[in-house]
Amino acid sequence: MKKIITIGLSFTLLLIFMSCEELPDPAGERGTAVVPGITDINPGIFDSKDLGNSYVEFKVIIPAGTQADKITVQCSYKDNFERVTMAELTSFPTTVRITSAGAAQKLGINLDDIINGDIFLIELVTTAKGITTRSTAVLSVPVACAYDVNLAEGSYHSVSADWNSEGDITLTADAVDPYKIYVSGIEEIEGLVEDLGPLVMYINPATYAVTVPNKAISSDAWGYGAISYAGSGVYNSCDGSYTMYFDISTTVLGGLGTYGFTFTRNP
Image (cartoon, rainbow, N blue to C red):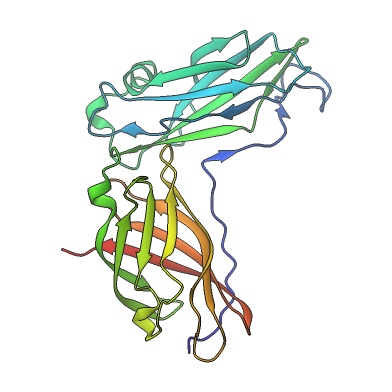
């Protein structure tokens, strides 16, 4: 049986909803600001294979019963924090579309210099009742390849150094939903029978974040009852790889900790 190690991991979410933090200038009391949000993100990436026509789209909302004079949508590239203005909104909710070409032009970037993995940061600055605040509702827009279901499924090699597991697995896309991926073989590597599988992963079509609802995949794990997996991760739409973090548990022992896995396509 695997050694049991509890590992504390933190996973950075692409979208964070928190309260607003007031800017140093102008003055004003904390806690009085309107707190906007970013919702309905689709798509949430700039397509690296078509940067001249790619865009992201989302909705800016404010809480019911509140009013904002203006919300400014700002954009930065990587960690430079140039914060150029992309749009100024005066009615809510409002759908916003930002093109990669438009953002690059305002930021003074050549499209040819933008590569996979680069990040554009979208931020909101709210003016209400004379108080200006910067919201911590932030959208990180990665530059990535468009989704191709044929690249997201097939024969894969699974490696987990901390769970001490390595071997081939099979990923299969659902016949109806191409963003629903079935994982077979992850515990067959360990000599178990996956009589309760397969494990199911869901790829967010806007951000490529992966979520895995808790599911038992084998009813007998080395005499410790059923073994279950749950977790989250990220799908790389350019090479088809997955970086996953699984919370593993058994019926008898309970939670065994969180373990990192990588799934890479076999040649």
